Image: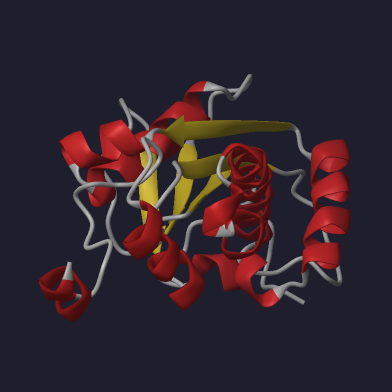
Length: 200
């Protein structure tokens, strides 16, 4: 079981995390979640450590239990304009904007963050494996993004997004080499290995 829901008891905290940072296609998605102080769950963990079935079941519990939650999305076009690091921060800011309760402290997964207004924040490396609130944000961001990629797969099934979710798998890169790119691809990323580019 993870460490705790909260870093400081008695303080309204929101856990924040993102999904899709390393993808070649699709948006980067973030979530912010405020959980009750006494929240516990035996399965909830970093979304990358959970099966799809467990992510879906914990998502249901999170949505039912959370005091407030929000989702932020930043498009591939915006990612190309401001770079993926700033896009990840922007997605978190947009998620925090959706919270119905103003948090007093933000628990950020990772080691960097652009401050959000006048709200104090704390960066926690591998925080999604330490605090329930960050793990919950990890799950909501991951499941929301996966659903978006499944929808985009219906428009472009040749890239296999229903399975790879836009990550740089061999099948995805082979499809880019064969079919070119879509408006959902991140043009600022290295979409093909250098050797494949030379052979085009």
